Amino acid sequence: MTKLPFLDLGAIQQSYAPALREAFERVLRSGWYILGQEVEQFEREYAAFCGARECVGVANGLDALTLALRALGIGAGDEVIVPSNTYIATWLAVSQVGATPVPVEPIEATANLDPARIAAALTPRTRALMPVHLYGQPADLAPILALAREHGLKVVEDAAQAHGARYQGRRLGAHGDAVAWSFYPGKNLGALGDGGAVTTDDPTLADRIRVLRNYGSRRKYHNEVLGVNSRLDELQAALLRAKLPRLDEDNARRAAVAARYLQRLQAGPARPIQVAPHGDSVWHLFVIRHPRRDALAAALAQRGIGTVIHYPVPPHLQPAYTALGFAAGSFPIAEALHREVLSLPMGPTMRLEDVDRVVDAIDAFA
Ligand SMILES: *Cc1c(COP(=O)(O)O)cnc(C)c1O
Image (cartoon, rainbow, N blue to C red; front, top):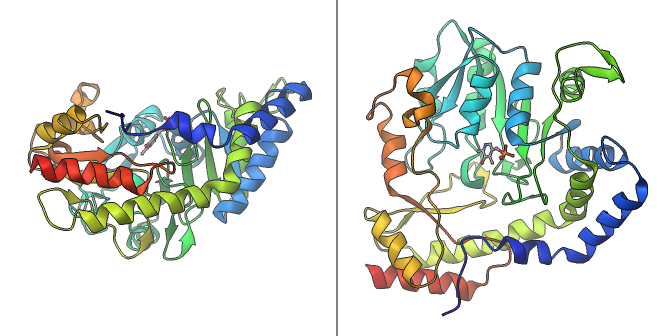
């Protein structure tokens, strides 16, 4: 029985091998490995791709979120609205700057932050809203941006799962005040190690993040603010430059895989998370809900099919967040999703026959 992995990262990187080797050789020969030409060029190319004025490369997605919040002046005593259904990094960025994450439930059908529930969570301390473009699908930004304008709040988007996605026809990258990206290997645009970036239309904000990421320094050995070391490597930037020109093509392949899943899963107990009409998902993940999720995952594993749960425990029930005092049942929509979601194999190197094999196995289980 041939295995069908959840994500065939080796095959994806192999499909870029000649371009990646050339990028590596270029960096090797350059004699320059931190904050040079490759990072500068990547920042220009990724900003252009996203339709943003500025891009600042940083060490990872969590730092992109954290530095965006810091550069916006958010810190101790402030509250930030975060989704109850997200990867914990969104919350951790808020905690790292000393602010408090205030969770808001998702729209159940799309699993994405519900704009209609935000107003009730605002207090005089609220400073920012952090929508997450979860599973590759843009959150509903228009009402979120309208609320932010009305209440004088900042919007920091977590786009770690949504490289290339569009909201109302326009690419993610500068709808909110700052947009945070991760280039973790498994993302739609993934490096061969850690990487991240912030895109924005605000040059002053970009400048602040550039100073913060490099020891708070603009001139070597002159430190203006208490900065950190969070730089995107020259090598990772060069590798990302090699992959960026084919991102749309890879995302189109993911969309074809998703379309096949959607077509074949129309009836039956496995219900796909829905995509709202306001955005084009880039299908970072293909997520279904199933009432007997764990048994289904085991049955698929028996047939050599890999799956992953995104995510098994919501942030408010993680031991790391006991101090916030949320009991089980505090966020029932997020908790129901965490009990039932399962991510099926997805990726740009998957064939439609692979999709059929997964759906046949789901049908056999039911
Ligand atoms: C991957 C991810 C991050 C964090 O990215 P890292 O590069 O691993 O730090 C943040 N938010 C979401 C939603 C993610 O999926």
